Image (cartoon, rainbow, N blue to C red; front, top):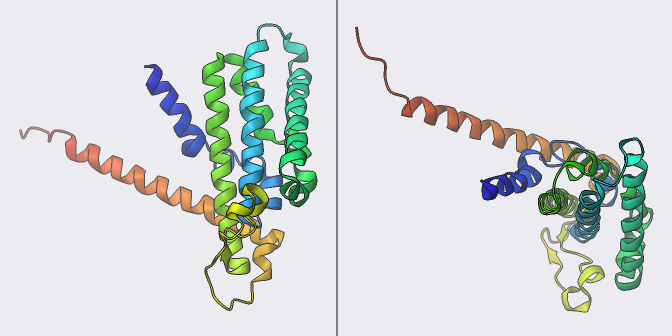
Length: 230
């Protein structure tokens, strides 16, 4: 039963209730920083770290916080972890920190984080709360990376550029030229390109879900016994 519940938490965060594709939350950083895979991955991992840490903390203190002050306390918890992530990024990933800029401290305003703290972590034990934060964070990161890759290929004709800002000189040469002699498509790099890419990802998910639903319906119809004649 426990494995089924934990599996459901992972499936919800990664797909069925994905914060970006289904809940449509946290779109400000998602649309602003996804000009490349490296930027999307950096913002996604920072958001995931804050999600897991804040979910665990809210779950631990849920019996100590009075209901009327719970939201300010949750915001204080989230702001503390965002500050810690910002300082760590400034110290260890300074080039990435400069690229992401103001959107790192703005993680504290990400509705996904306060939403999971209020809707899930404050009502569940530590382990499910941590798993929920991890699944939601990874689902959010997957969308950031996918959208970053899409915009990078269409906008610049490359993939995995600037990976050195996250992984150092070892992966600085990971850049792949997908479209040789490409002059670029400026719209893909600008905010309108982010909106278009996000719309395509949401539409793709809906198409996949509808096809899966039709297959399940057809399988049930085949498996159902035929009514007896007469």
